[in-house]
Image 1 (cartoon, rainbow, N blue to C red):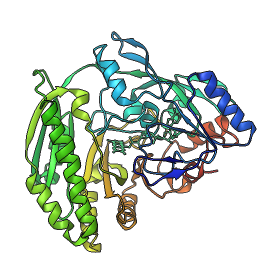
Image 2: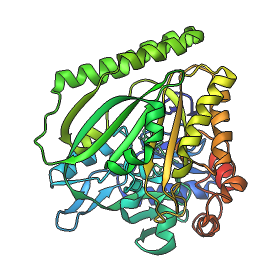
Image 3: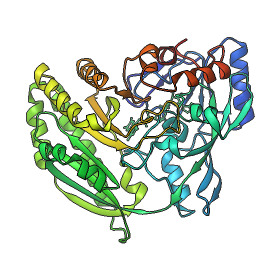
Length: 427
Ligand SMILES: Cc1cc2nc3c(=O)[nH]c(=O)nc-3n(C[C@H](O)[C@H](O)[C@H](O)COP(=O)(O)OP(=O)(O)OC[C@H]3O[C@@H](n4cnc5c(N)ncnc54)[C@H](O)[C@@H]3O)c2cc1C
């Protein structure tokens, strides 16, 4: 049995394989196709939706990982697609290189993160797929392609595993750098009224807005020439593991047992939050451990709609009396056209994420947020929960048909499909 990180997506693949060469991947795909079987790939299983699920062949690329080549002069690096991001950071560090931006955690595989357009925050920075210069991909007929230009590359960067098995990437990285992090508690009304100043005035800006409270936790990161002053391993453990993870988990358990107490618990959590600052190597600042289990939706919205959407979600929580113990997380991503299915395709984007603790009813909240996001032309994160189908998604992506033409050519018989892929991309 296979289960995702959140523990709410489960499947029973007929075969589980960990190929160590591209030839083995190719053989696995052709054998499965000749049996009429389907193939899905799993990275770290950190997606929230059903995109990994299969009763056919499930492939893990954990053995196809590591750094093949790094050129510090150009920043170009060649990696195995199964490389976990924390491993990638360590390998790049050794060459004085770094990813220009990262998300909240670092345990995903490169291919899993890139294929769903995983992103961090920073108005001038695109999602992780924008760093991809070239892709090695095994198609449904077992042939191995190197995609380095044109629409085929733009289709494969963000393809949710629907075009084939990605076995290697060439990424464009940057010289390693340090970040100064500042965390502050601020009134929501102030953050929203000054939003453009915060987003435009920092390399990376994001905020967490706790429902049922008036305050947000704002986080800004800026490149720094100062020496690193990390909190120290013990302090970091206490902060990340005991305070952020264990305290949140304990409070969430109380909230799940007594949902009426959630507004009070959220007010206590924000009251206890304190300001802090530090300087450290970029990847240590971007990501932190997450051990609390939850489910999540995230919507890519036109940046100009951000304030209205945040206000509308808060109002809907109050109107429906929803008990929501996790904060809304709001981040900003540059417009790009590097991927046909980039959720930030063609527009500066505000991402609004909403979460629900494991075992709590998530549907009314996530569905309400989907309705609000839809009113503003929101595009769902490809690795998170939503219930849109191909017909609806087609209207939100200007180059949808180009992707579909390439998908039909690469996988005419749906070898890489499952129920989720058929829903979001069509049969
Ligand atoms: C705690 C937590 C924090 C998160 N934080 C962020 C964040 O800050 N920003 C953000 O944008 N997202 C975030 N996410 C979402 C996460 O980055 C994505 O869901 C990502 O896809 C997970 O990577 P993975 O390796 O676990 O991929 P999986 O979930 O295993 O797979 C994701 C998709 O990629 C496909 N795939 C994987 N490998 C290959 C391959 N080699 N070839 C072809 N297809 C492949 C899979 O079939 C699947 O469709 C978070 C998720 C969690 C659970």
